[in-house]
Amino acid sequence: MATRFEQRLAFLAEPAQHSLLRAIRRGIEKESLRMDGDGLLSRSAHPEAFGSPLCHPSITTDFSEALLEFITPVSESIEETLAELDSIHRFASGSLGDEMLWNASMPCRLPASVAIPVAQYGSSHSATMKTRYRLGLGHRYGRKMQTIAGIHYNFSLPPALWDALFQLQGGEGKADKDFITDSYFALIRNFRRYSWLLIYLFGAAPAVSKCFVNGQSHNLQEWGEHTLYAPYATSLRMGDLGYQSNAQKNLDICYNHLDFYIDTLRNAITTSHADYERIPADEQLSSGLLQIENEFYSPIRPKRVTDSGEIPLGALRRGGVEYIEVRCLDVNPLLPLGIDAQQVRFIDAFLLFCLCQNSDLCDDDANAAITDNLLKVVNEGRKPGLTLTGEAGEQRLLVEWGESLLDDIDALAEQLDRAHGETHYRESCAAQRAKLRNPALTPSARILDEIQQRDGSFFHFALRQSQEHAERFKQSPLLPSDVSRFAGLKVESQAQQAEIEAENSGSFEDYLARFYQQYKAL
Image (tube, rainbow, N blue to C red; front, side, top):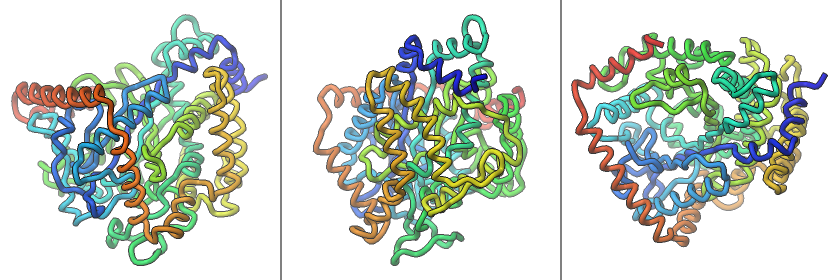
């Protein structure tokens, strides 16, 4: 009998499904710090030219006023997605004056933690909530950790493809939300099992400036006066220096079913944590282990667009999973946008592989192996002879396991190429296979080589790359139509913020209480 993977692969190979594969939808959210000409974190307010960070559809901020987030619309076209991301970069670069974008995940030169400005969104209740949440993050994890940048990749299948897969498994008519949600959770479980491969292939943060660590305990080696690194590291952002906390290490979030996922996250949000009860009440949203869902730092999240004022878990309960958000991607400083079409194509094929592959439910042993494998690849992924724990508990060479996974991923890439009438997906797989066979081709190895051969420190390497990218953007100004479009978005976003602020009623405390009441009603 054919396996689930073989059945789904054969199904996707049918010409009738090619139009559905072309309708895969994606969007990118890319973070970049603003810095001055000397590579020091900007402490200025959000640039007025960018409009309202609360309401602008393309340019907002994350933790800090200085941490910009660029957002592309959802699109079926990789080329359109990257072209829009490029346009946002060109607009931003041309509007920053003496400032520039720092194009790396690990941050530029930082001031004292207390001097890192927390993002501001206006005077409305929703704006106050966003800022207070960030103040809470600063208390819980330190403001420096919150200056780490990343790329989030949003991915969804078209409804017609879900319907076809539903019928393949014996269903009649259209796929219901339970089938789609269960399928996305199966994808997520496999993603967690195999995400170490993405970290190896695309990790681009093997080093960091000493000013970031600033006395924090670590196992890194010194490289000159200003740099810390690990010789075989891939993505320090995804390890103990990144979005980690001792409190969250004991957080056991279950991905076996939507109800389990909601219940475990809700409990973390509604259960007070003793360490956080000492934080001033007006500098966090709550003393819960998590203030809100976004505080759970996972490499992947199930998502649904929320209604106004709705909590994310409530949206999932109401409508099921709508798309998934991949969160383990570094900003590659070697690339002007931090990501390119070759990487996007591989991620598409990888996610389809995760969807098609059989996906057993996870238990404590499986979760422990997943965490151990990820951290091994984060800290020493390019180490010769590195072994990981396989799905049966056996030790497997990273290179051999990776080659095996790539065989199946390549089979999905072939179908995507047939659907698009091209060879780019398989070429991307071939490029990743070359990285497995020669670790020197990985971004992490190339970055360390650049530091050694040209720059002498991580800071000077990333500063040079950022300056070169900034010059490239400035040398290709926007078309007048795009200039007009961004000017219109600025005005519209400011008007929307003014409307929201004019509608404020009641106290913020009552607003916050109504928000948290939704968790009790789940």
